[in-house]
Length: 88
Image (spheres, rainbow, N blue to C red):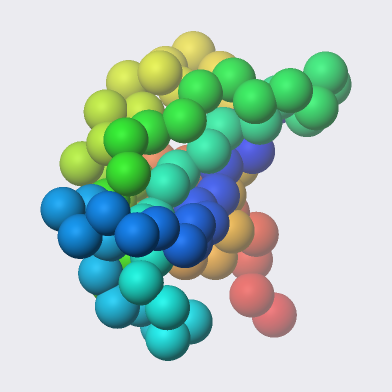
């Protein structure tokens, strides 16, 4: 099983970053981690930090990497093809 999430990385490169919700100049990077080995399987290219995780995920090319693997994401990834927990 793989887990998917996005994280904001502070950057100084004006061609990659953007002012984001953490009030810093950041880039959004998507990461897939293997639940068994706890190792990073793959990461996507940086996207501006003001882009939502689902937008970056859909445009990252990573969904193709998850074909045939059970992949889970947090609630932000609804309708992306990933398994997400139900909100109760």
